[in-house]
Each structure stands twice: as structure tokens, then as C-alpha cells.
Image (tube, rainbow, N blue to C red; front, side, top):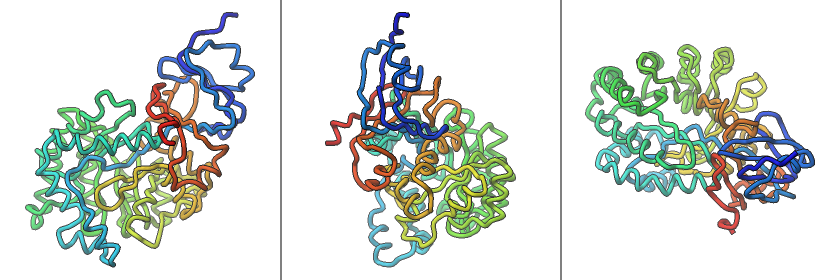
Length: 410
């Protein structure tokens, strides 16, 4: 039989973590037209294909590309001074109450043009892709008025053009109450539900609608109202829940059928049970807990043991987490949240795909799926976790296109 011509063959990988079906050894992966054509024992794959390019993966590890399912990558300005204040003992919530935090980013983002929002975000996006993220969700939420929220979402759309990584947009007008509505939260929620959400949906700028259900921000009833309004206009619900306190957000997530509930540092057992029953993905953000120097991480072990599906993400944003490396997030998950290396890698790939409703197209190495993968200059997952704070050599492919080469990381 004549070997079939294909674009790329990654041959004889010592170890492959599929993301969905465990660990395999001595595997080759055939890639063509941006998708995985075949995957199996190197001895079986060798004679089937004639690749235009072949990469020897001997002695190396292959994982799926990371699915970073929670970021705030587009924003204007800089909040480095707040970080220094926190290092000196100031609390994030106190800074926010004094006009810092999200509201500070709102003021700076409103003053930033569409072109500048895109230009400022591009280097962040490039670094995240080089670090292995091949699907990246980006939220709005630093505009808190119709004009700026639309501008942010248009910037996300612009970033997605010709980007090898898949970009997913989320509308988050209910990220905070802006200064001009501080005495009229109901009026602002009306603006979000009756003007912003319809405008976002009409222009097709977002797939998801998110809300910050937290003490001092939006309570469960207000959060439910926003998410139900989003659903009426075709935006699938997500929710920031139970971050600083048990806000009831995990229960709201279950009630509205949210695709994911995110943060979850303070989620009570009943919230875990409700999310499990409703099929909500728990997206955990240990980089934020670390960056804010908070003492308690999300109860990942309890969630996993209950059967709840878990995802990991960076939460890259201007104030509470500037981490862009999913490998660092994996290391924190293992070190601080009791996850095993395999669990953390799967949560950063297939779990993230579930958190974005893309589990059928990406997040795992399976025939027919997008050829999003990372070839690591490492023998196994233990080495990845051991070196989690370092820039390990890696080559990254997104949709079968090499977007970062290990030699560039030397």
C-alpha cells in the first residue's frame, strides 16, 4: 500500500498525555490539514504516511495545547502600583473600595483607543501562545459603559483575525458597578441587561456572558438576572463565583446551567454538589490566589473526588494576576491544591475545552481534532511540574501550524 501523504509526523514520542485517555508510550502522531489524522504506536504509524515534515520526538513528552479558559487579556493602563501596595500589606478589597482595582482599570481602558487596546494586548497574546496556550478565552469588563465594552469586544475580534490560536470572546459588563452608577446599581444592571447585552448579541461579538457574583459587587439575584438576560440573547452563562467569600455564586451557576463557574476559592460543599449535579465545570485560578497572597486555595481535591469536572486557567488580568504561563498554573495546582501532575495537565487542556464548550474540537489528542499540541524537551509530566517556574524548551503547534519553536527558547 502506498503511504498517504500528510503535512507532519511527530514520530516515536516517548510519552504522550492525551488529555482524555490517559498516558501512552512510543506513540507517533500524524497531522494533515490542521487536524490529527492518526495517532498510535510508532511501529504501526511508520509505514502508513509519507510526511512533508517529520519531527523526531524520541525521548520527549507530548501534551495537548493548553486551553486557557479564563483571561482578561484586553485592558488599558497598568496597575503595578497596586501590586506594590499589596506587597506592603494592603488588601485587594480595601484597594478596590478606595477606587482602585477593577474601577481603576475602567478609567484607563475608557481612555484607550481600539487600536491601542489591540497593540497593548498583542505581546501578551504572543507570550501566552509561545508558552503553549492554543485556545484562549478573553473577557470584556473594563469598560462598564456601552461604548467601551463594545470597543473591548471589537479589540478581541481584531486579535482573533489571523491568530493561530483560537480566541473565544466573553462579555462581562457586570464586572463591577462603575463610578457614575455607584448610587444606582439597579440602573446600571438595567443598562447591562437592556442595552449592552442586546448590542453585543446583535453584533455577534461574544459567545458567553459572565458576571462577578461577590460580596460588594453583585449578589446572587442580580447575577441571575444578568445571566438570564444573556441567555435570552443567545449568550451562554459563565460566572465569577465564591472567590473572596461563599457568595452563592456556585449555586447560581447550577440554577442557570452555567458552562463554568470560576475562582471558587470559598465554595461550600453544597455548592460543589449543586455544580456536579448540573454539569457545571469548576474553573480554578490558583495564580490569582498566589498573586493576591491569599491563604486558601480552591478545594480542588474535594471537587475532583466528588466527580466534578475541573479546569485550570491563568486569569491573566491587570490587577489580581499577571501570570501568562499555564505551566506555572499547573505547578501551583500540584503544589498548593493537591492535584496530581496528570490531573493538572488534563484540567489545563481537556477540562478547559469543556469550560468553553469545545471538548469535541480541541483540548485532547484524538483523531479528527485540531492539531493543537506541545512537544516538550522533558521526559515526563513530573519533570514539567518540577520545572514549572522555568521556561522549559517546547515547540507548539496550533491547528497544525508551528507557532513556537523550542530553539527559540534556548
